[in-house]
Image 1 (cartoon, rainbow, N blue to C red):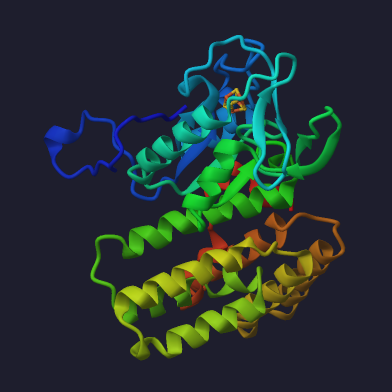
Image 2 (cartoon, rainbow, N blue to C red):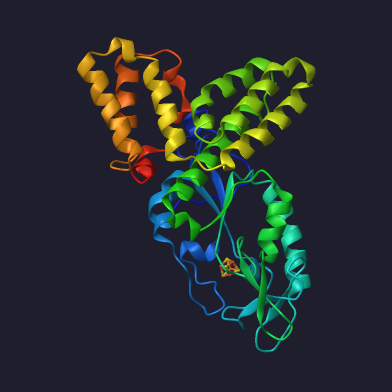
Length: 340
Ligand code: SF4
């Protein structure tokens, strides 16, 4: 597991720094509910270690673990809690003795959010169903103890409000291959966008280049968003550089939230093939089309046609496509495209 405590990113620049642990600039920094890493911080003294996160994703990200309940001063083990009352402003109550922990959790959340601003997070993975950490459909109980409408955990709500562009997910939803691939694309893209713009003199050319390199990736998410981003880039001269970066960054991250589909991938694969198919023999063209159609009909995963396309892009040195992020949006070791 990769874990660092320094809020700012270190860079490897001189030989005498070689012995220090270096965080590559393109490694996403991801907040995580601490129990998911195997730490025994849950109300029952146990943990909820998630093997994909600890054994597969960990080498490629830097975790920032937080257990809001323990860091707010509650003991382990502790009485189980749930959300109660108004789903839009729920209270955090112990289930049996009805002790109200809302105010301390909210005060802690505000403090921790301010600290996390220094961490430059690229994503956050929360534990599902938790009244502190859950993001989707956390049960909110009536004062009589009946589950009613659903809400969001106290701490995760504070994170969502403070970091509107930050990709958030729950570990349970990450078992769904397209959701998992989408989340990991987003955290790597967010890191790349920030590397491109933070602490740099922002120029129109820089944003045009970024937009161009992400063209096919964006098209697998939303064609209309891609065109809206293109219009923004075309009118770049009307904006102050900082405003342009803010507007582009927000729309870019919003675009990636739209799930990619097989149909949209097929469309993009055909466009990519169109860049070099004239250089292929009749047999090679037919074989490439067959792999795309097999993927379209769900006989093979996306990795199959993409591997063939990447092969041709490499050996034919197809200009423009060589730099397309779509071909390598996240580490291949994660095998994400073997499952979508
Ligand atoms: S779900 Fe959140 S509050 Fe509960 S144990 Fe895990 S990290 Fe702590």
